[in-house]
Amino acid sequence: MATSRTPSTNWSNVAYLFVTDDREYLLDPGERFESDLGILEVPEDVAPGDVVETHLGTAFTVRRLRGPDLFTHLERTGAPMMPRDVGLVVGKTGVAAGDRVLDAGTGTGILSAYMGRMGADVVTYEIDADFADVARANMGIAGVADAVDVRTGDVTEDLDELSGFDVVTLDTEDAPTVVERAPTLLGRGGSLAVYSPFVENTREVVATAEAVGLQGIETLDTIQREMDFDDRGSRPSTGGVGHTGYLTFARRP
Ligand SMILES: C[S@@+](CC[C@H](N)C(=O)[O-])C[C@H]1O[C@@H](n2cnc3c(N)ncnc32)[C@H](O)[C@@H]1O
Image (cartoon, rainbow, N blue to C red; front, side, top):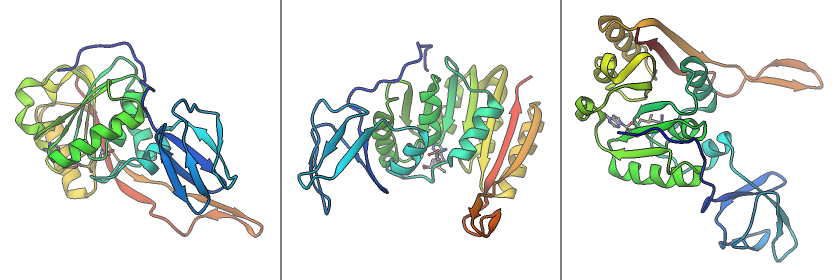
């Protein structure tokens, strides 16, 4: 079980983004990187804001990763939550620094990393051992290895040992099994957020939340349209997927 901690992000030993024009690469201090732009010897003491050049003279600006960069650059396993849906989870649950959060499944760890970077203490479960290893490495890159405790295992098998969280976030098919235990997993007033790709699973989540007495149950279909602006005019983009899934929120009274 996580204990409370002072919010902090550990930037030691993290990779940085090396950006030039429309290209960017995630590289470690001391790494040697070769591309058609030349050889880049990354100094051990490289820092955000530095400009480093390849042997052919191409300049790369060094940047610290921000949330959307994690979505683009972390190694992917389980389908990562899109930043816009993370935003909805943060807005609706109010997850904040110092909160204790239970998250399952970890997958790539995007949601966990965002919440860890906000200063929450996150315990996250990943049933696939290889995925869990990747997620641990991803938390290091995100600078939240200390804030996010990636546990290898099936969250449904540990429910008796887990209780009193401020926020529970679920992104698994068996989420209803966890929702059933929300009254003990959550502290009073605590928030639940469940991401489901299909309506059928969403209905089961809602029915379970009602059955165990959660309040303020609300499901949102997460649709967003990107806008295109060009010389001819402005209109919603015809490309891309507008719908990602369903997010159900509820609170323990
Ligand atoms: C869609 S991904 C989660 C993505 C994650 N929210 C993110 O932002 O990167 C779902 C993950 O849950 C894991 N999983 C499924 N059932 C689980 C369970 N009962 N306990 C722990 N992990 C589980 C899967 O292996 C998969 O990696």
